[in-house]
Image (cartoon, rainbow, N blue to C red; front, side):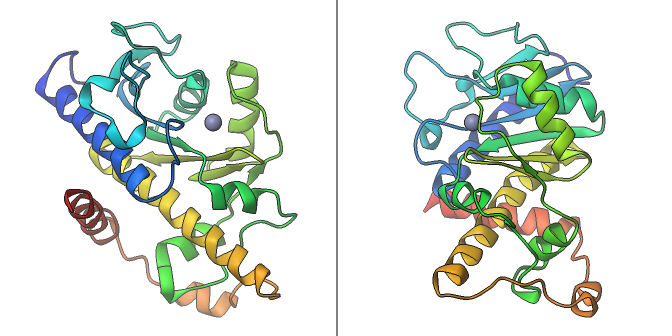
Length: 245
Ligand SMILES: [Zn+2]
């Protein structure tokens, strides 16, 4: 695992800062709420914190990404760990393979989380990663509480199970990715984008009077796994380019 202050950790802090900007550019966060973390040691993480000049996710810099342990203590300087740090620490504690965690309050996801039967794989080839994600199940944690304790985070993590994304009813979502940290940060953000797009489409369909129904098992089974390099790397280049624009 990379040491504190190493080039590897500095690069990950830059990556998490960029990922926060992407979340804002993609309308996953409206203003100052939301955070991303990446594991840098078995019980340590880099996490987007709140600094003295806090101006929202769109303006996140690497300075806003601080290294803390699972108790929230660490190299904080004048920054404060997010109130909902337990979301990150409890998921990382329970899922040793997890390396990146995203928490956000996308409005469409919040609206969809209030439906009785929120998100189904209602489309296929339009967005294959989203279809596969939805087909595997997007659970809902039924509480709307601010997740500031291990108990609440544990209950949320129970609902998440081994899935990549859980909806938090009347609150937002948590997205989790495994594997090398660089790819995991990108993938966790992309999963949030996929779920946000699915939520928007579901709400649009319902507003038009339609009833969202899952596509057929036959069509789902025929959807290919596009593979990490295409889904993660190509999409991440796209998202970064959009930021530059
Ligand atoms: Zn929250």
